[in-house]
Amino acid sequence: MDYIDYYKTLGITKSATEADIKKAYRKLARKHHPDLNPNDKEAEKKFKEINEANEVLGNPENRKKYDKYGKDWQHADELEKAGYNPNQQQYSGRQQASQDFSGFGGSNFSENDFSDFFNSMYGSGRSSRGQSKYRGQDFNAELQLDLASVYTTHKQSLTVNGKNIRITIPAGVENGQVIKIPGHGGSGANGGPNGDLYITFLIENNSDFKREGNNLYVDVDLDLYTAILGGEINVKTFDGKVKIKVPAETQTGTKVKLKGKGFPVYKKENQFGDLFITYKLKIPTQLSEREKDLFQELSKIRNHE
Image 1 (cartoon, rainbow, N blue to C red):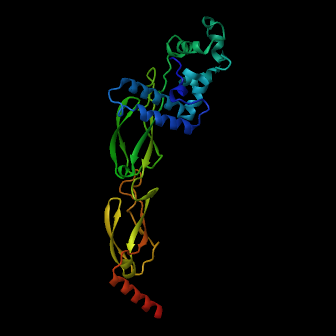
Image 2 (spheres, one colour):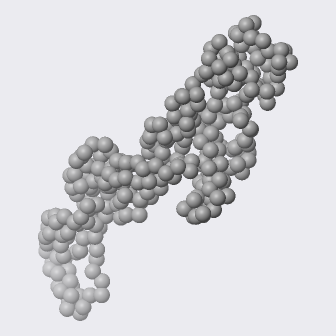
């Protein structure tokens, strides 16, 4: 496997923070996404390279292994056990006495030689240990949705590493939540299991509702006359309108809870949070002369009491 500079692929330096990596990945992924570049093989190739780089550098544990072992980072656990130190370019494993390293110039060899050595020891079948099975690498992807789309369970297709997969998105997914799709990562080696796919949800809220967990919050205008005399009003919820009663002399800022009218609880069928309404008094404008006279009369009555 040739060495690929994933930092160069994303256009960042080795000192880049996790936020820098995420920002660089998002920018390049949007630019080269196949949906925006139909029938562009070069863009498709670049998109795959960007995803591969993000799958390594975007995962702190994978990045640590990559920084230490370079192209052999996927075999880091085996290398640690074998005692290989890439900084010293020296093998000090327990099997040193029973293996013949003369073909590599004694016990010292370069990192470029190491992949061939590793394959001969673990992957080619010439070693007494036989072929080792390697788990495929995990993939990371982001899926952007709006709040309305995660109010109900639905299926959606997405492209990951050049492959189209169809997943079920449960109602109630939250912004920033990560879910695992087993077996949809990289292919395993030598019959090893596939890696997993981790999807991070980025949910944009374009609605009038504020979401906090499973609860929703919204401000509702209340006209002066209903606030004073009481009555019924229609209030918009996330799944339609409901009619509620307003007591007489309701003050601005009054809060009302509508039980079960909030957001679906993740993976709990028919369970919902609550909707909290805050009344905001709406003062009438453009009054007629008759209305002004009546308000003045009411003011006089109020002041004489």
